[in-house]
Each structure stands twice: as structure tokens, then as C-alpha cells.
Length: 185
Image (cartoon, rainbow, N blue to C red):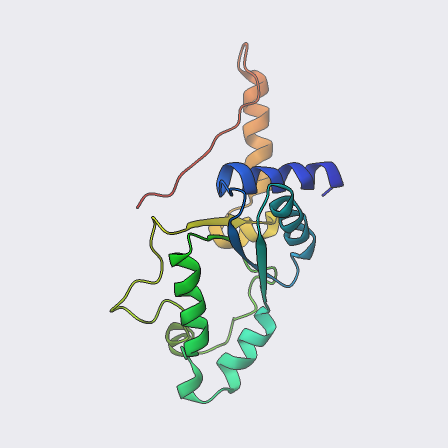
């Protein structure tokens, strides 16, 4: 992705998607393989006045190693300090931006599905007290990468885009349009 497009994408995520305000703390969740976009978003966050940006990178290869090799008690384990950090961030009206999508589709093939199901993300295991309050923070999920879209949605998105563009060209008076979809809750 070229520099100008990357900056525009980061601006869209920060100002429109997360609506980060001056003085706000932000958690930026990403993964190895998305450093370029993560850095652009962090830079934009500071430009709009974020007081602190905490970046956490996940690594799918390490996740696989945990799933295959860790003792059963390690699956779904939540250190108290991580749970407290998430709780404090929410009560402090922080924003969270998460870049999702595995840069290595198919990496977990062959791993026991029961072990995968037991290994939950920290902050989601305690059902008695919600750590994620919609009033306390902004959570935005950004799927990055065309290959990721193809693997997560089981389609050839590039082929779909080409077909859609060919169809638009055949519509009289038509112009390319942008759409914004929201998940159904």
C-alpha cells in the first residue's frame, strides 16, 4: 500500500471509526505482519491528540505453539494484571482499536479444535463482570488485507470486485460508490 493511501486509511480509522479525542488513551491491538498499518495508525493517534497509545502485537505462530504444547491449565488463562489493565482502560474512557484477520490463513489447521475453543482472549473469560462497557470505550475491528478477507469470508474478493466493477461500467450514468456496512448485533 502506498504511503498516501496508508495515511488516509489510518485517518479514517482514527477520526471516523474510533473518533479518538484529544487527551484520550488508546489501546491498539495488532499482529505481527501488520506493522506498517499499525505504525500509521499510532502516528495518526498522536497527531489527533491521544495522550498515550499502547500497542500490543499478537503472533499467530506463538498462539499455535501454546495450543499445541502448553499444559491444559494454560489454555484460557488470564493473568490478573491483564484483566485489571482492561478494566482500568474501560473506566478511564479509553478507546480500543483492533486490527483483526490472521496474516497466515490456515496456520491452525491440524490443531485440536477443543483446545482452540478453550483458549480465549484475556478479558473475555470472566462472565460475572463485563470488562467491555460500550459507554466506557470505543472498540473498532478493522480487517486488513485482501487475502485475509478471502480466507475469513470464503470468497475471492478480488474476483467479486472485478465483477462488480464490470457491472457498474454497464450501468447508464453509474459512478463508483463507497459503502459502509455495520455488523448486526
